[in-house]
Length: 267
Image 1 (spheres, rainbow, N blue to C red):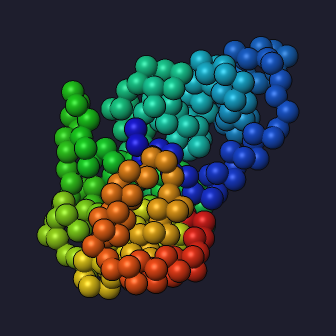
Image 2: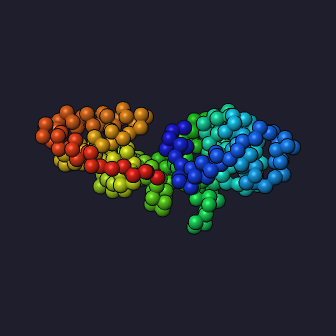
Image 3: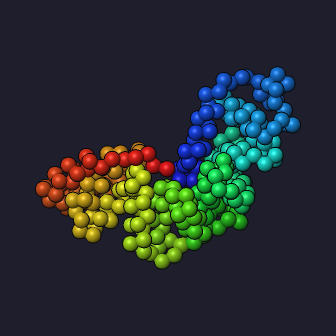
Protein backbone atom coordinates (compact mmCIF):
# COMPACT_ATOMS: atom_id res chain seq x y z
CA UNK A 1 0.00 0.00 0.00
CA UNK A 2 1.19 3.51 -0.61
CA UNK A 3 2.77 5.86 1.83
CA UNK A 4 -0.31 8.08 2.16
CA UNK A 5 -2.30 5.19 3.55
CA UNK A 6 -0.02 3.27 5.83
CA UNK A 7 3.35 4.83 6.31
CA UNK A 8 1.75 8.03 7.46
CA UNK A 9 1.80 8.35 11.26
CA UNK A 10 0.72 11.15 13.54
CA UNK A 11 3.22 12.31 16.18
CA UNK A 12 1.22 10.58 18.92
CA UNK A 13 1.30 7.19 17.19
CA UNK A 14 4.95 7.56 16.20
CA UNK A 15 5.85 8.55 19.75
CA UNK A 16 4.13 5.55 21.28
CA UNK A 17 5.89 3.10 18.98
CA UNK A 18 9.20 4.86 19.53
CA UNK A 19 8.78 4.48 23.29
CA UNK A 20 7.96 0.80 22.98
CA UNK A 21 10.95 0.24 20.71
CA UNK A 22 13.44 1.15 23.46
CA UNK A 23 11.93 -1.28 25.95
CA UNK A 24 14.13 -4.32 26.61
CA UNK A 25 13.22 -7.35 24.52
CA UNK A 26 12.79 -10.77 26.02
CA UNK A 27 12.86 -13.89 23.89
CA UNK A 28 9.77 -15.62 25.28
CA UNK A 29 7.07 -15.76 22.62
CA UNK A 30 3.90 -17.69 21.80
CA UNK A 31 2.76 -16.92 25.34
CA UNK A 32 5.53 -18.86 27.01
CA UNK A 33 4.66 -18.93 30.74
CA UNK A 34 8.00 -17.29 31.44
CA UNK A 35 6.92 -14.22 29.49
CA UNK A 36 4.27 -13.35 32.06
CA UNK A 37 1.76 -12.78 29.24
CA UNK A 38 -1.13 -14.99 28.19
CA UNK A 39 -4.28 -14.61 26.13
CA UNK A 40 -6.01 -13.59 29.34
CA UNK A 41 -3.62 -10.70 29.99
CA UNK A 42 -4.75 -7.12 29.73
CA UNK A 43 -4.98 -5.56 26.26
CA UNK A 44 -2.04 -3.17 26.70
CA UNK A 45 0.22 -5.96 27.98
CA UNK A 46 -0.73 -8.01 24.93
CA UNK A 47 -0.06 -5.00 22.71
CA UNK A 48 3.41 -4.50 24.20
CA UNK A 49 4.14 -8.20 23.85
CA UNK A 50 3.00 -8.11 20.22
CA UNK A 51 5.10 -5.07 19.44
CA UNK A 52 8.26 -6.56 20.96
CA UNK A 53 7.65 -9.85 19.15
CA UNK A 54 7.24 -7.95 15.90
CA UNK A 55 10.48 -6.01 16.44
CA UNK A 56 12.27 -9.30 17.08
CA UNK A 57 10.97 -10.73 13.80
CA UNK A 58 8.49 -13.07 15.48
CA UNK A 59 5.58 -11.87 13.40
CA UNK A 60 3.25 -14.82 13.88
CA UNK A 61 3.49 -14.27 17.64
CA UNK A 62 2.84 -10.57 17.10
CA UNK A 63 -0.29 -11.34 15.09
CA UNK A 64 -1.55 -13.66 17.82
CA UNK A 65 -1.00 -11.07 20.54
CA UNK A 66 -2.51 -8.26 18.50
CA UNK A 67 -5.59 -10.39 17.80
CA UNK A 68 -6.24 -11.06 21.47
CA UNK A 69 -5.67 -7.42 22.34
CA UNK A 70 -7.95 -6.26 19.52
CA UNK A 71 -10.68 -8.61 20.73
CA UNK A 72 -10.39 -6.87 24.09
CA UNK A 73 -10.97 -3.51 22.42
CA UNK A 74 -7.40 -2.24 22.06
CA UNK A 75 -7.43 0.16 19.12
CA UNK A 76 -3.66 0.27 18.63
CA UNK A 77 -3.53 -3.49 18.22
CA UNK A 78 -6.31 -3.47 15.67
CA UNK A 79 -4.47 -0.72 13.77
CA UNK A 80 -1.16 -2.62 13.84
CA UNK A 81 -2.89 -5.79 12.67
CA UNK A 82 -4.63 -3.90 9.87
CA UNK A 83 -1.27 -2.56 8.72
CA UNK A 84 0.17 -6.07 8.64
CA UNK A 85 -2.70 -7.31 6.46
CA UNK A 86 -2.45 -4.28 4.18
CA UNK A 87 1.28 -4.80 3.68
CA UNK A 88 1.30 -8.61 3.67
CA UNK A 89 3.70 -8.30 6.58
CA UNK A 90 3.81 -11.56 8.55
CA UNK A 91 0.46 -12.62 7.09
CA UNK A 92 -0.94 -13.16 3.62
CA UNK A 93 -1.82 -9.77 2.19
CA UNK A 94 -5.55 -9.14 2.42
CA UNK A 95 -6.59 -5.58 1.70
CA UNK A 96 -10.25 -6.29 2.32
CA UNK A 97 -9.46 -7.66 5.79
CA UNK A 98 -7.39 -4.53 6.46
CA UNK A 99 -10.24 -2.38 5.15
CA UNK A 100 -12.67 -3.98 7.61
CA UNK A 101 -10.31 -3.34 10.52
CA UNK A 102 -9.73 0.28 9.54
CA UNK A 103 -13.49 0.69 9.13
CA UNK A 104 -14.03 -0.66 12.61
CA UNK A 105 -11.58 1.88 14.07
CA UNK A 106 -13.14 4.74 12.10
CA UNK A 107 -16.68 3.65 12.92
CA UNK A 108 -16.11 3.82 16.67
CA UNK A 109 -15.16 7.50 16.49
CA UNK A 110 -13.19 9.27 19.20
CA UNK A 111 -13.72 11.64 22.08
CA UNK A 112 -11.84 14.97 22.02
CA UNK A 113 -8.32 14.47 23.35
CA UNK A 114 -8.53 10.68 23.12
CA UNK A 115 -5.28 8.74 23.16
CA UNK A 116 -6.65 6.86 20.14
CA UNK A 117 -6.85 9.98 17.96
CA UNK A 118 -3.74 9.04 15.97
CA UNK A 119 -5.10 5.59 15.16
CA UNK A 120 -8.44 7.12 14.14
CA UNK A 121 -6.72 9.55 11.76
CA UNK A 122 -4.54 6.83 10.28
CA UNK A 123 -7.60 4.63 9.73
CA UNK A 124 -9.39 7.44 7.89
CA UNK A 125 -6.33 7.99 5.69
CA UNK A 126 -6.14 4.29 4.86
CA UNK A 127 -9.85 4.15 4.05
CA UNK A 128 -9.54 7.21 1.80
CA UNK A 129 -6.81 5.43 -0.15
CA UNK A 130 -8.90 2.30 -0.50
CA UNK A 131 -11.96 4.24 -1.66
CA UNK A 132 -9.84 6.18 -4.13
CA UNK A 133 -8.51 3.00 -5.76
CA UNK A 134 -10.96 0.26 -4.81
CA UNK A 135 -9.97 -3.26 -3.77
CA UNK A 136 -10.01 -5.76 -6.67
CA UNK A 137 -12.00 -8.91 -5.99
CA UNK A 138 -13.86 -7.40 -3.04
CA UNK A 139 -17.08 -5.46 -2.44
CA UNK A 140 -15.02 -2.26 -2.08
CA UNK A 141 -15.24 -0.40 -5.38
CA UNK A 142 -13.50 2.84 -6.25
CA UNK A 143 -15.50 5.76 -4.85
CA UNK A 144 -13.59 9.02 -5.35
CA UNK A 145 -16.39 11.05 -3.77
CA UNK A 146 -16.07 9.08 -0.52
CA UNK A 147 -12.27 9.34 -0.65
CA UNK A 148 -12.50 13.09 -1.10
CA UNK A 149 -14.86 13.40 1.87
CA UNK A 150 -12.52 11.38 4.08
CA UNK A 151 -9.49 13.45 3.10
CA UNK A 152 -11.52 16.59 3.75
CA UNK A 153 -12.46 15.33 7.21
CA UNK A 154 -8.85 14.72 8.19
CA UNK A 155 -7.59 17.89 6.49
CA UNK A 156 -10.14 20.19 8.07
CA UNK A 157 -10.73 18.62 11.48
CA UNK A 158 -7.17 17.54 12.28
CA UNK A 159 -5.10 19.76 9.97
CA UNK A 160 -2.99 16.85 8.71
CA UNK A 161 -0.75 18.03 5.88
CA UNK A 162 -0.77 14.73 3.96
CA UNK A 163 -4.58 14.78 3.91
CA UNK A 164 -4.51 18.41 2.77
CA UNK A 165 -2.13 17.46 -0.04
CA UNK A 166 -4.20 14.49 -1.19
CA UNK A 167 -7.40 16.54 -0.99
CA UNK A 168 -5.84 19.34 -3.05
CA UNK A 169 -4.80 16.89 -5.77
CA UNK A 170 -8.32 15.51 -5.97
CA UNK A 171 -9.87 18.97 -6.10
CA UNK A 172 -7.39 20.10 -8.74
CA UNK A 173 -8.14 17.14 -11.01
CA UNK A 174 -11.87 17.04 -10.30
CA UNK A 175 -11.81 13.57 -8.73
CA UNK A 176 -14.86 12.97 -6.58
CA UNK A 177 -16.34 16.38 -7.31
CA UNK A 178 -15.96 19.47 -9.40
CA UNK A 179 -12.45 20.89 -9.98
CA UNK A 180 -11.62 24.12 -8.16
CA UNK A 181 -8.06 25.39 -8.63
CA UNK A 182 -8.43 28.16 -6.06
CA UNK A 183 -9.68 25.72 -3.42
CA UNK A 184 -6.84 23.34 -4.27
CA UNK A 185 -4.33 26.18 -3.88
CA UNK A 186 -5.74 26.93 -0.44
CA UNK A 187 -5.17 23.38 0.78
CA UNK A 188 -1.74 23.18 -0.82
CA UNK A 189 -0.76 26.38 0.93
CA UNK A 190 -1.89 24.98 4.30
CA UNK A 191 0.18 21.82 3.74
CA UNK A 192 3.15 23.77 2.40
CA UNK A 193 3.30 25.90 5.53
CA UNK A 194 3.60 22.72 7.57
CA UNK A 195 6.60 21.56 5.55
CA UNK A 196 4.93 19.13 3.16
CA UNK A 197 7.40 18.87 0.28
CA UNK A 198 4.95 17.50 -2.29
CA UNK A 199 2.49 20.28 -1.55
CA UNK A 200 5.30 22.81 -1.86
CA UNK A 201 6.21 21.47 -5.30
CA UNK A 202 2.65 21.43 -6.62
CA UNK A 203 1.96 24.87 -5.10
CA UNK A 204 5.05 26.22 -6.84
CA UNK A 205 4.04 24.68 -10.15
CA UNK A 206 0.62 26.32 -9.98
CA UNK A 207 2.17 29.68 -9.08
CA UNK A 208 4.48 29.35 -12.07
CA UNK A 209 1.55 28.61 -14.36
CA UNK A 210 -0.22 31.70 -13.02
CA UNK A 211 2.70 33.89 -14.07
CA UNK A 212 4.50 34.14 -10.71
CA UNK A 213 7.61 32.79 -12.36
CA UNK A 214 10.32 33.48 -9.79
CA UNK A 215 8.26 32.56 -6.73
CA UNK A 216 6.88 29.42 -8.36
CA UNK A 217 10.29 28.25 -9.53
CA UNK A 218 11.73 28.97 -6.08
CA UNK A 219 9.19 26.67 -4.39
CA UNK A 220 9.81 23.99 -7.00
CA UNK A 221 13.57 24.22 -6.53
CA UNK A 222 13.30 24.11 -2.73
CA UNK A 223 10.99 21.09 -2.94
CA UNK A 224 13.40 19.29 -5.25
CA UNK A 225 16.24 19.91 -2.79
CA UNK A 226 14.24 18.39 0.09
CA UNK A 227 12.09 15.68 -1.47
CA UNK A 228 12.27 12.00 -0.65
CA UNK A 229 13.60 9.60 -3.32
CA UNK A 230 10.09 8.26 -4.02
CA UNK A 231 8.92 11.76 -4.99
CA UNK A 232 12.00 12.91 -6.83
CA UNK A 233 10.92 11.92 -10.34
CA UNK A 234 7.68 13.89 -10.49
CA UNK A 235 9.05 16.88 -8.55
CA UNK A 236 12.10 17.00 -10.80
CA UNK A 237 9.92 16.85 -13.92
CA UNK A 238 7.91 19.86 -12.74
CA UNK A 239 11.00 21.79 -11.71
CA UNK A 240 12.91 21.13 -14.92
CA UNK A 241 9.91 22.05 -17.06
CA UNK A 242 9.63 25.41 -15.28
CA UNK A 243 13.39 25.95 -15.27
CA UNK A 244 13.61 25.39 -19.02
CA UNK A 245 11.25 28.25 -19.89
CA UNK A 246 12.44 30.75 -17.26
CA UNK A 247 14.99 33.39 -18.17
CA UNK A 248 18.51 33.33 -16.75
CA UNK A 249 17.71 36.22 -14.41
CA UNK A 250 14.56 34.48 -13.21
CA UNK A 251 16.52 31.29 -12.56
CA UNK A 252 19.13 33.12 -10.51
CA UNK A 253 16.49 34.94 -8.48
CA UNK A 254 14.52 31.74 -7.91
CA UNK A 255 17.62 29.82 -6.82
CA UNK A 256 18.46 32.52 -4.31
CA UNK A 257 14.88 32.65 -3.00
CA UNK A 258 14.77 28.85 -2.69
CA UNK A 259 17.57 28.96 -0.14
CA UNK A 260 15.37 30.94 2.22
CA UNK A 261 12.45 28.48 2.08
CA UNK A 262 12.50 26.42 5.24
CA UNK A 263 10.75 23.09 5.77
CA UNK A 264 9.21 22.40 9.15
CA UNK A 265 8.37 18.84 10.12
CA UNK A 266 5.15 17.97 8.31
CA UNK A 267 2.34 16.15 10.14
